[in-house]
Length: 268
Length: 275
Image (cartoon, rainbow over all chains, first blue to last red; front, top):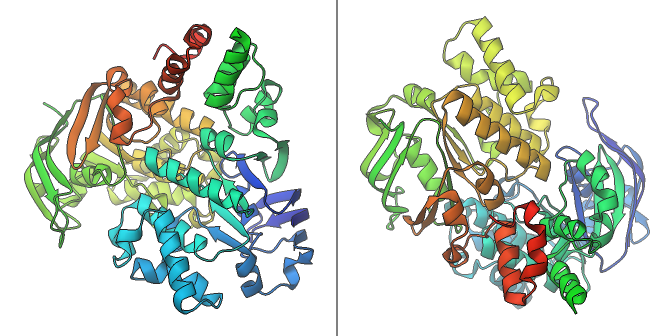
């Protein structure tokens, strides 16, 4: 269980990135955070593994305030893949990069090798283990940043805009990874501007504007027509199937599948 | 004369054995918007670097064929001349920002100042570029304390401020919120239409390309796999096997046909399903 209790964050220089956020995320939830650029999404998730500490309020992981937890304890519970992989990657070999996290959590020998191999396999980097990360293109460096978090096996995985720069198959691969994590009962929290990905892969959507949470619900709730004005206020456009479903009086149909289902039901 | 012309271009990175671009022809006219898409590692970013003259100019490697920027071979252009003719927005905004400036305003002024313009011209250009990219409200902020999307818009403003005849944009909206993506699309369309700037835009967001591109080229394995008018290419069934997600309207129309609910869905035509 992750709990944010009235947290605010004011960066040095005075910009208030978070302004009183309350959020409870149960174990095993699959949650997307959306909202305008600069609305505080990345600042929020950096509080979950202690990279940032709230200037007001408290973050509790399994009941324990992060203010009292050491970074190593937080790192074992919450893995965070950065938006910009180049701020995360430092090793000169892909395999070393992926092994860094689990090694620091105490994995050795066969267990470490398995964790690294599985993470590289999931991100389609199995053949790139011996390459220099900077010989990979941007999209595969994004996958590498993701692999090094997956390899840590943390109960909570946080992904900051995981589909950025990915092609069709890359997005499908990441959707598969999210589904597998969710199926294994792990908590997945992702920031995304890709509304199709959000509507299809997550069961809960949290919408932020100017450092606050303005909407919180299932994709069908959040993308329902009643909320479009609020979404527009934070620069979000509902997915196309939601717009079409509304136009056709079918209710809230945020995904391709839900739109087609609603049409089939109506014609039956 | 085309403002940018690639003929028989092959390019190989220094130390690499494979050609990243392997026989590519492309001509871009003033005021034209060409969208580039393709699977990851197809050569899209390499095409950007080569077309802007940075490869081989700044990063080495081997170039065959010719790249003419404003009629001059890229290998014969001094970097400061190439930069004025052809601006490039990198895929990762953090790579673009200079890291030497204290405010966003100064960051956007960096290019114009290095062109040796007088103060009034610099102020005018910075104001113009920041308005176009909608970052005026960030003027006093520190460039290294921006969100990912804000940094991307500031990087765009800093390239616009150079007012090049050709703009090469490598995923300019990758970190932007949906409405921000739409706004940047409108800005780019307006720029091409009103100033005659020619645009080469790499994008995975085919919905955006459907709105702004005159032509779309799909790159596969360093070559042009598909090319033509934007509507035809984005509606082409081969798009998916080339690793490109079709625009949402095309995808839904196909799904509707497959599932037999086409007639019902066609009522949603007002939302662009005709594509």
